[in-house]
Length: 404
Image 1 (spheres, rainbow, N blue to C red):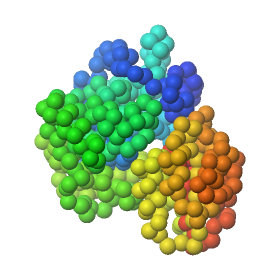
Image 2: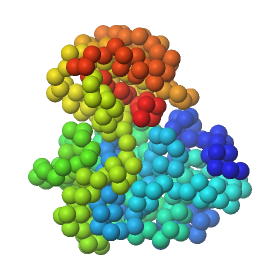
Image 3: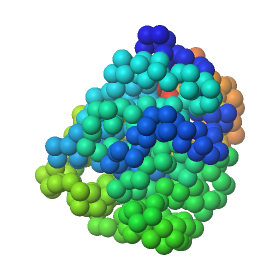
Image 4: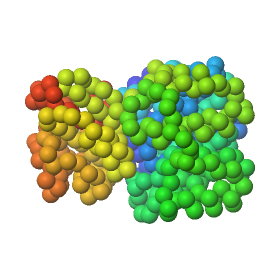
């Protein structure tokens, strides 16, 4: 199989949460341990940083990777989901994994994958770890896919664990209270391994404290650190929380790596160039001013909408689409009524029908028309908007993927 045939097989033959949702969720790490054995245990050969959290995982992982790159290290970066190309998930110093490596990895291990019914995510984690070891990275930054305790990435023993924050998302898998969700994320805390907590709530603080105590893991709460003044290429207001978390993690990493303040400053300023991170308060157009953001749950959307509210504009245009397992009653009340809405369905099986989104949004006083695709909706917003208007595109990672 060539690269396209290989990735088509990966997407179609194995459950993939990005496309299919709940069917892809595995409730234990049995398959991952089998896969690590099949691959001669790459997880034991990696120096790593493990990053979990409801929101900000990708930004935090990318900032850490960028700083380490600026310090002169060869840095693996594993993130999910991808926006355009599967290979975005696996990078070394910003360069995506080669098509040939993906093809050869699947060809060499396909009988094992089929015999053990591995999920798409399990297979991809194995690919990333195998690639990083064979390419001799100095360190790998590994973003959790979902949760933590049962996530396929949770077979590494990192130099530091990071948990960015806790909010309501994927509650059907992780629990319906903040404490339950925190317990799943806290599953990445390892014995004697420092853990940095970004933001916390009254309900989540004792969960983290108790787990860290049980594991004798030093715990640092970044939320109480001073505000960080270093400029960053990631412009979202919410990044101030992530920057604090990143700097606390970097302080711990200085025990293993030579990192200066200049490396930190350059890493933050060059994070997009160094890692290819997209879709975080990304400016698409100047007049009218248009931005997209991958925020997709109440915690993340509240931050983005608060930032939009700080701008002066004549009319707000919102291009909105979501996946079909999204808690609309949690997110739709956050959106302003005095805006023009352009409802669309992300081009994927999990995308929620735009007419259903329009109907539900109407209950909350959010009015607008339905469009055949995200790109058509965005183009219509651009043509309707005056030069002093504001256009926001979001609601789902997969909405953003269609217009960047």
